[in-house]
Length: 490
Image 1 (cartoon, rainbow, N blue to C red):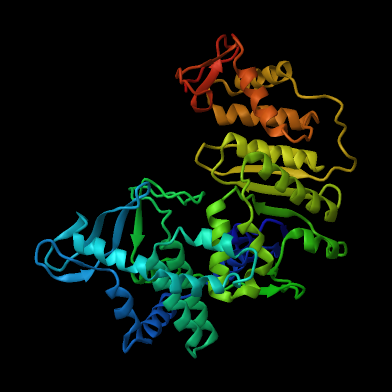
Image 2: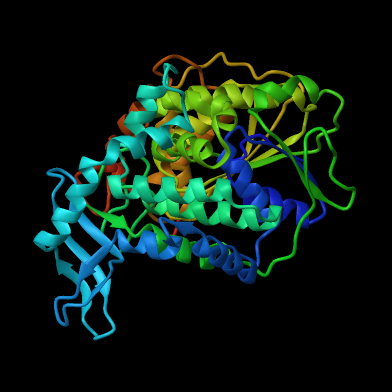
């Protein structure tokens, strides 16, 4: 089995646990580490032991835990006791501290307004941040590296206090003499803390993973040590280990994962002699925040050599859907070159939205894959897509047009028998285009397709039963249902 994306470690590991031999192309060093953690999940006792060893390390004559916690001190509004805050709250636009979150033994706590003392302490870190920033930047890009300014720009999403705390922990990890497994657990904890400590996490009940390097209206400055403690619970697992090897070492016949440390394009030339029976993976969506942060994290945790092949993400500024379609098309094309005709290609698409689906179907279709099936269960559930490599290339004599799309959507709704959310209708239209070989590549193909589908849906025979202003948020049906088709309701 080949996973050309390397974006969902659990997919590869679950296939291996089912007895498959899985080859994963993973260009992101962080994703490679996550595959390792998934294949060899650490036990809670091991993580707690790693945290304890890290806590006992010394910094300026005191325990490292005490030292890191001390930089987040705040004062209880009730009893006046000093204690570490869980987080400080900041306004994204003004850069002003607006609150703090703590829990005192006296029973007071929760979210409280920040005090002048809190603001003064935070300001003191801003005045001394230059040295700390320089140290963590050096692990990503040298002073004369042309990518250094880009790394500096990425580092701006961390508060000065977080930069100091993370830099101190990383330096102590380098200095510790410990076992490989203990170090792996410490690295996992630091990765969790580095992810938790940036300024992209909004202060809200629901906090979806940030996808852009834009500070939210109110963000959390999380306590780095408390993030380490949270990581010891988040990474802990009782699952058994799965065989894991690095290319070109093969996994055992009983099943396992082999990781190629690079993108598929660098591996494609070596796959001609491997009988791949299927391609399976989760399609990544554009995520500027994760990819950019991965470059920082890789440098911090494993050094400049580890991040060097991946550092180009720091230069990337274009993250629109057309760009993503181009990237996926290249990857699909590389996959298509190394698999035999009729080889199945199964992919999952999480967090589906219309343009993401268009980019994927367009990229695969124009890279030579033939669509077999497209399953959309719900707007919040992964889309499942099955292609195969055809014996002969598809003919593409016809171009997409509004009349054809209206016919395809009408037939879909008649067969369904009741209105459908826009995503379902959009998917039906794309599937019809792919089936007829009407997908053609151009520099604006994605925008053209999305516009044609909306134009077709604007015809008189379709109606948004909810009357939404935005057609993509509506629920669509036919104005006149076929008399032989029962209406089943929404």
